[in-house]
Image (cartoon, rainbow over all chains, first blue to last red; front, side):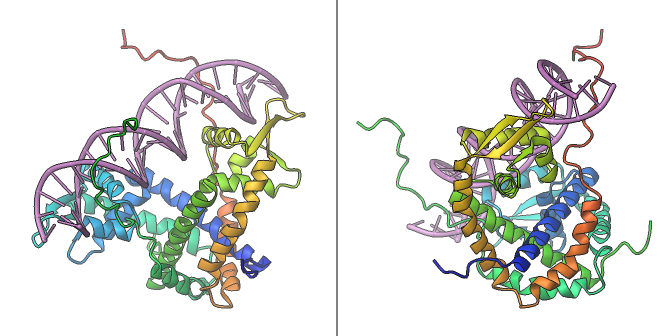
Length: 174
Length: 174
DNA sequence: TATTGTTATACTCTATAACTATA
DNA sequence: TATAGTTATAGAGTATAACAATA
């Protein structure tokens, strides 16, 4: 056990500030997305990510990995969004196992309606209270952290449990 | 509609950095707390908050408000923690409607076991990658934001739906 | 044999509304 | 009448493990 694995008072204060701002911001954003578009933060992320995709379509697995999500969880969310007509699925040509996801017009409309309010909220809560140097301060402090965190990717889909031999019927041992 | 409710490129970048660091950090912390102590982040917050309480005990509602939580949700979590023997409830003397919560020895033990690893993880993921000025940068940028966010408290328990007249039996209208 | 996506299942968490007891 | 806490209920979200289809 190393002896330097503690936080000094200054670090602790910075950590608490970061946590608290993160929580409060997330809470406000969550509620707004729910109110304005009936979207969970994850659904919003999925839609926004698709919108930002040049080609417009992405593989299920790639999205799940990007937003750090289990495959089944993403399947569920994709189902929800598809039911509401916000996204559509199409088979990938080069690999018939894959499914591509893209925004529908309705999905883009919803995003276009929700996004300005989202941005305005972030501006009001985050940037209007921030000193002029805040953006640079944040980038200087957290940019390297982000890069480091990306290096050790907390794989959404952990190496999938490999195909197991055969289903072992859960009966009492003979 | 005002025209200045947008984010410039620098703000957008800072926002994305903040979001991403927040998510990745939260994800790592969540997993560690689960692995090391079988605690959700909220349960950890409750325990840590109780530990930091001078008197050692707090009212249910006050805790729920502090961590931004519905009363029923907090009741559920308190039940979970009580079942595991990590907290205990006792009646408040001055107001017999209130219930006080305090850590048990087992709860303090668990916290003492989990906390060093939590701190070490934060140190490793957040501070070891941060430049020397990072702590001050963070405080300068986010301190005012935190203060502002606290001012407009996103009340956990929204004004409770006031006692409604009488239960309206949900039968078909006559 | 490995990978992509789906599904069944089981579980955790959450909020709403109604309820009891106390103020 | 209002407040503190509980509970029933119902629903959303999540992960695991198994599955079919394809590589």
